[in-house]
Image (cartoon, rainbow, N blue to C red):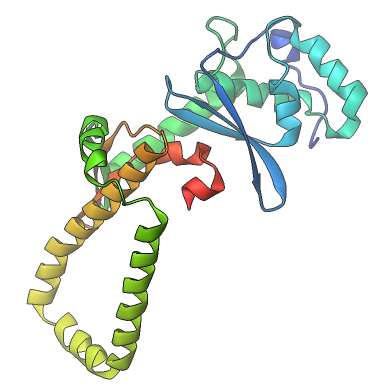
Length: 254
C-alpha cells in the first residue's frame, strides 16, 4: 500500500458489485523475481499487468459482493499489503478503460477522466510532431494467417540454430575484415548516394523485421490488428501492433 489509505471518491464505488467479463483471460508470469498477473481480452485487444496486491482485489471481482466489503476484507487479511482506496479507484478505471468489466457497472470516475485526458494529450502531441507521425494503414491479420503456413519451420529449434550459425559466421567474417569494412563505410557514408540507398533499403529491412514479429505473434495465438508506418525524421518506418506479446510466456516472447 502506498500514499493515502482513504479516498473522498470512495462513496461513488463502495456499493458497486463489478465483475470481470467472461472473455477476460488470466495468466501468471514470473519476471525479475516477482509474480505478475496478465489480463487480456481478445475482444478489446488490450492487456493489463497487475502486481500481487492488485490481483488480490481483481481476482475477487465476481459480482457477488460490493467493493466496500471486499476492500475491508483485504485490509483485515493483508493489512499494509492490501491496495488503498485510491489504488482501487485507479485500478477500476484501468479495468473499465480496457473493457474488462461487465457493462454499466462503473460510474464516471475522476481517475478515469484524468487518464482519458492524459491519453488525449499524448495523442495530440504525437500528431503535431512533424518528425514522428504514426499512420495506421490496415489490419494485417488475414495476410499473416495466409503467410504463416508458408513458414512451418521458422519457429523451430533447427531454425534457431541455423540463424545463430549465420550470425556467428557473419560476425567472424566482419571482424576479420574490419579495417577494410570500416574505411569503406566511412567513405560511403559521406556520399549522397549512400544516404539515398539507405533511405530506400532501411524501410524494406524494417518491414521484413515487423513481418516476422507479426508471424511470431500469430504462431503463439496472439492477434495483430493494425499495421502502418511511423514517419521518423522523414523516413517511413513500418510497424505492426505487437502488444499481444505482453500476454505470452517468457519462452514464447523470446
